[in-house]
Image 1 (cartoon, helix red, strand yellow):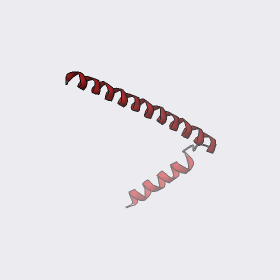
Image 2: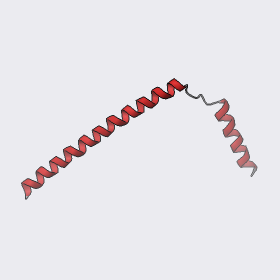
Image 3: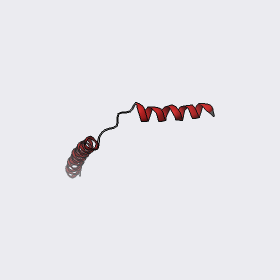
Length: 64
């Protein structure tokens, strides 16, 4: 059990003393960047889905 306690203590020490946490403005900026990237990827995947659906409908109409 002492190994687990030592692990928790070292993890806490690292989080408090060694990790550099972002400021509130940095956090907001990176959140906006992630949301914009997510929206772009969503639209890209939606476009590919719609295009493949139209291609498949076209092929099925030709083939019968």
